[in-house]
Length: 95
Length: 493
Image (cartoon, rainbow over the protein chains, first blue to last red):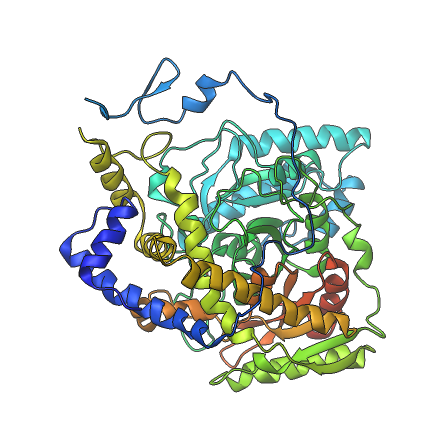
């Protein structure tokens, strides 16, 4: 499967990465080279094969559904580019 | 390299306990070495001098009382991927500008609990995506090794290039690193150092900036096999904060170093003799086979038929998981933000400016293979191929193979700004052809220096083991180390 410039722009939009026309054209070639490389997997018969989920047989650990480290709004927003009184600030999303 | 910085971790540990010198002296020797080298090598992105001196002082107090930990007073470098409380932690990306976490990763906390001293944060490929350390926002790292024939600057490999260079150039006693497709073992091979990626689940991933969660594992890069064993024992733990951390006691890996390989069955997989492989790599492999045979190991030919599909499957799984993990960098919670009145423009502007070209490429590939209608054809298929890759290994181990010997990389270190690598991302990806299978199957793998090529550059051999059998890898790697000797770059920096 090969991608065209329009697909590259659509994927960039889904990825939330702004790209210029020039970048999209360059990425088209690069992404097709990678997709061409991974197309080798078409040769592999995976009929009846389960997808791998873990390296060693294991059951996923579950924790108690309790608050462990709450009340840390200040620490959590400490690295935010914009915050106010324990809240993250973002551009208006609802009119 | 001063007399103090030339010591291995094991030597420094013993001499600190015998009070031949203090951790403050050892730490100062390293800080001085960093000051004299970092401008040329660019291994450290932050040097934490004050913290290092304070930690060394505290270590000296504990040592004076005779109650130091296993790494008491030993100065280490930390890859920038590990969260270190109140210290630069940016995965060497522009998008994490100014991020200083209010928490500590489990692995680094384990090291501090054992008494280790932090010298600073080490350069790496941005978000650990790269095989040459050239994708770092902080610029490339230079390999302390140079070809005998030229003074061209070479890459140290990646993504743990800062870790490998710092260890090789005596700028720390040992370093933390991480490995998603070969990021510990390939740089170790390129710099004449020892690197081990333990079994998936052996080291906690908590507090390590996520790249591809089903593949990422932490491990050490060290000057010799014993030091790698000493460091891994302290890094590994069972951690409730990482649900993929497996509930198994951590063995005393150092005790395995020096044990005989007599009677071990070592598998040689024919699929690793790839087309176009340089003769020097094959000769190195043959030498490794002879060394293990001479030490009493039994050599058997094995087949791992799905080997060639590991790298293409990796370039689906890793970007897919990365595209999901890196969705969190949106300009809201941390790091860089490109202001805009529109939230989507803010996201897109921030991510376009904050991510480098390789990271964007992988996010785009990952988004594409996970987009509507493609999941089964790409990600699910690749995860099924992983099962087949793992089954190949399982069969070999069921047939009595204790460890598998392969080359670590298909070449020695290449030049910074290599034109062919820059022009073709797939050519760069091929660096990981021998290492990536191990991540896909979740197995442990160690890279150990085994010789120099015609240019005088180090080459490594890789040993692959059963899940949670790192001890056999330390045994066999030590045997190779004994036969091959140690490799130290000649100082030019």
